[in-house]
Length: 594
Image (cartoon, rainbow, N blue to C red; front, side):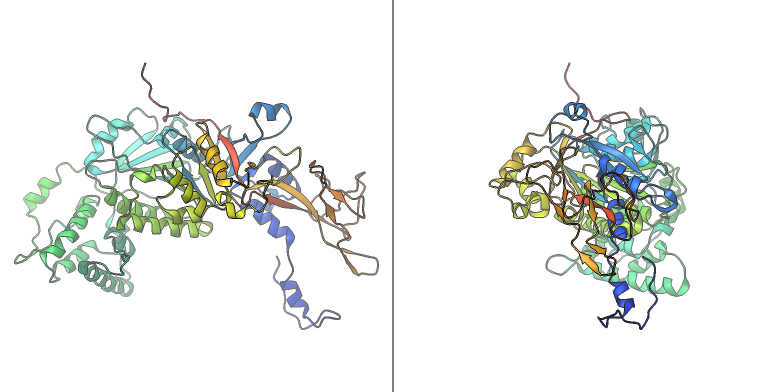
């Protein structure tokens, strides 16, 4: 909407300033186009209608980047839909920032769906339209890993596409094993996760120390001391303009009069951080215990500790289009709590880069490292902040986990929830409390959920669930899902387009006549609309803001009436989709006995 210049003139007969009326104007065109452009999911019917009707800036389509997610199987087999001329395709909008929550039992297709979304975002293929590939960051930790066994992250198989480069960052204590595990995959590089001193700051140190207020409002005394030290150092940084100095931070701590019982947990956390820092930058001395002074290592000891190190610099986080960075902290020495702390630092480093390249952040098998610890709470807070700011940070977030109960706050904020097969009633209760489409309170129709569009030519329809026993019907649908099938909850997804006439027309005398284009819905269920008091019908080729078309496509005066394509959203409906096959190598197939 163009800026309005204030004026003191008033509208005739109302006394309301014209500038105020202009500010209250409902710009239907911009509002509807924003709903279309920011929809996380849309159908082929929507794409054809909107891109033809309303091209974006520089004649670029509204849906400029998208990929095939799956096909609707609500009305029956896909072959039956195809033979009937219907289009069941549902697309994932990679151009718009969004957040997706994927859950389900093992073997139901969670990691497959995650890989499909990554394929749609990182490289052009037969399944998508992607003129500007994104850059990705994925967190992975497998608790089952040993010197002789281990499996690569399933998303790493995207490297079979030569246009996708995969970089794996791992714990220094497991570098040789990780290199062996990923050696069979093409186009994959493995590096030690190394953090530069310049990458540390006050907020990351607080996250690493798990400075998180408990339910009782308190935290250990040594964390109060740590908080004060970091605050004083930050004030000094603001005055000097210098970066965070880890050596000075640790030296300041060593001068504090703390008990051994307080220093021990602090020392353990700092040693964990130093094991992931560039070794030349990590001060080589321990914090002083009682009756001891802080002592640096002897030159000989320092040299011997560096024998096995070949990393002299930290990792580069500059965004690269078409690159997937996997932070794989599968290691017997890395606990879930340590992993969450390091994931939080990596997330912050990834997001602070330039947003010129679109970004996607994914958590694979999140239930393996997200728990009730303070470190996990800190990571969850970072993810929540990212989702809340996703529109301003050009980021998409995908969380894949078995249990929807790992963080109901994440479930609340995600714009899309993809539910694969599971059999736990407790998981269903979590969905019921946090998803509109899974709550019986949104179902006012006793006959069940009516389709958002009853049109006989609509290729995608919401699932019909009985209202009298809604939750039982929903649970039955989830339990009976086949591998690769899923129920999709996405209130802002656009599944069809409706053409609404403006509710105001102007007669020859300049008087507004409201309601002259009343739209009536027939009771025969055909979905055809009857336009009362006029034989004007919307044409699929009529442009927004241009002349409306009559039944014989004759030109109609655009000053009298306009038709705008309005989105039909999924709302509290549910889609049943079959997720498409992968276009890269599938590394998640079950291993069977032969």
